[in-house]
Image 1 (cartoon, rainbow, N blue to C red):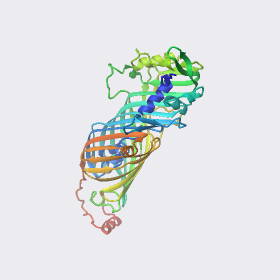
Image 2 (spheres, one colour):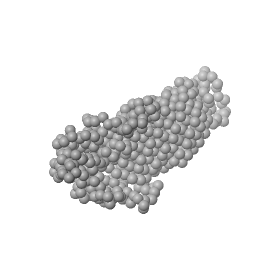
Image 3 (cartoon, helix red, strand yellow):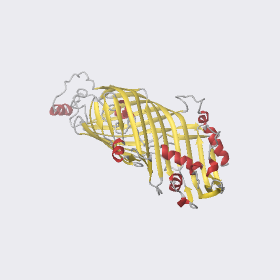
Image 4 (cartoon, helix red, strand yellow):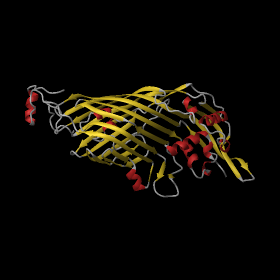
Length: 494
């Protein structure tokens, strides 16, 4: 019996996504004490940190994958993946690449910091993947599914790529005896470099493994009968030109976006009111922060080849749905399936939301070289909204113990990924170089995992703080002296 199950369009998309498709990038290094310009990625207020007065990023790259179905193998075995099927899970998967290009930050004073960043990102999400479709797509033996209904009530596959030019400003907004409040905003010019989505609505068919027999080769071909439901596919019109004629345009499909952030740093030594930060007030005892990143969306003109397909009882043999050999471009492939399934054109344009995400962070310093940070991220918008189009991050909780000094640091992120489960990684910072992975340790110990990632960074940091000139009133050098200055309204810098 022969059954090329993946030739059926929706199964093809599901299979492709589950095999190529984490949520956040640079995990473990994102909330360190010396992030420099990388502090803008999750909370723009982080760049006003008195451990780093300036930073030049040369290059940084991160790639991450996660899903809740397929375990990838990292040891030498015959199978590259382990699939526990049949499954009753609703499938989820994500793939993300993140490249931070030439960027810089500078602390203008103890109360102001500024950064300019360039960034390229690409993200793919697969959500609500039907368990019956996954079983039909990935099971080695599908005899048990013969003559059973296969359903896809509302699965989605969404992808987009975009670049960013961001301007970040962070300012100290309030000060108390033991703490400092900082707030920041990043205004971003974002440009769409590609976008597509596929959505199913109540797709249903009966799988039959012997719809057509070949008596000569003694092969039976399977397919779908009693088909019903709808599938909508849309992608950006300029993607039809991908190939020899494609040219990169940094400002293609421009739009605006923003990140907002606030932090509070608590010190166990009273603030020095007459001067700038001293060695006693340079490092916080603990720090808490909240931010919302990637507020915005990008509008695209839809390709005329975008399609809306309504199934109405017709039978399809999977073998007949293979792409013709002369269909080599995206445009040709989509046209073939649009004609095969009698598809109609959809809306002339569509908008793709950026992965708007809420971040909460808490960092506790045990001493000047050892600290532990907790970081929770969750999508503000996503596939739970019925008409949402756009990519999104997945929820992840990370606790990262770390030991670091200005020119060296070691990090061990321990994460619970809401799709891939528990992950343990490691990262090392040595001078201008950072290499790390949020999954390296768990993958090596277990030999397999549902997520895999890695990143490297090359940057030029500038450490330390700059003293202010003394004011007319000399600073007090004891806690009691500073308290007396406070009580009698001695001058201080705000």
